[in-house]
Length: 429
Image (cartoon, rainbow, N blue to C red; front, top):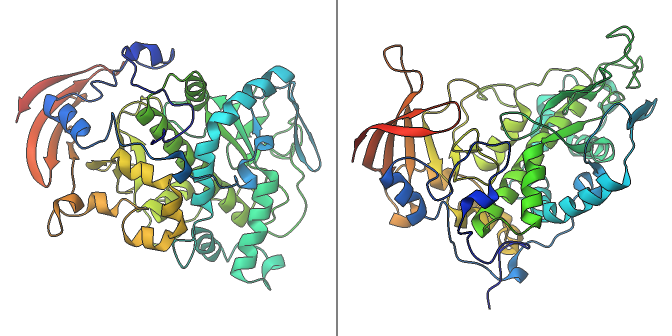
């Protein structure tokens, strides 16, 4: 008998979606995640939300979790009373209650961290993202690494990342992911750049890092501290209570895996560039110097995000889009089917990783492919084109063009308020 795709998932979809709403998020509906009757029907018909075929639990990833993501690397939260620093880096104090809560969260984090382990140790390409990063930073890495091969430098930097990185559940921001916080005693907790500021940078600020008079590119001051959005903490608590449906849980685990890998990419480039170094473009064609997006684009050939920016990590369908930089947002976005996400959690996908990539199981190219040639299954199922407001249109009005198999099936305008409520102002279909 087929089992659930991931542990701790409710057997059936909840009848009352309000039961799984989070206190600090706008009230949205899983049953109507998007406006537009045709669009709502299509994302269900093509499996972007809702039920999808389960797989046997024995087929799911059961690999060891990478050292960088292990339980001892996670802290529930920080304040001025539970962090100290010596010359060898930050020291985190924890209390029994927080540790007990984090033990519960950790159990829910395991499926996503197993996938994250596969993602950062990807063997589906001849040259890894980490090798390309070291090659891009070769002029600032430092003379002490001059006689080492690129692969040995990658290994050395990853050893530092694995030994020094800490993850926190601490901060709130509009977008799900890592963030930057300021704690009460003015010790700056900066996700992925450094922990604290040297005394020389701000008079009276404790020297939270050991800074040495070493050549540029030194790693001595790099102690990555990754602050994950507190919505992940809330969602894993809901998962522990078995209050998420199967598709909600799968989206949560996938988004969490992508988020932690995105931030590890920043931590790794920090080791390459050294303390306070600016990030660089890996390729001249990159839209911007942003290591996390560069990793996502390298692996998935696009970026992953939620359709609604204010949604929590499990709400509504996920979309893939082309990376074109900070502004404007790409006008065309593609919904990600649940079965595409599910494949990433299967042992078989990673057992033959290079074949999986050739078959389109590891990137979004098959979703973004032009709707010409190939079978119907190979074509784009759902596609949204945003026609952004101009000076002649209302700021809060967007125009959508929905395509299925390349053909336009719905066009409408939508007005959205700051609280997330939306209404259709014009509809054609």
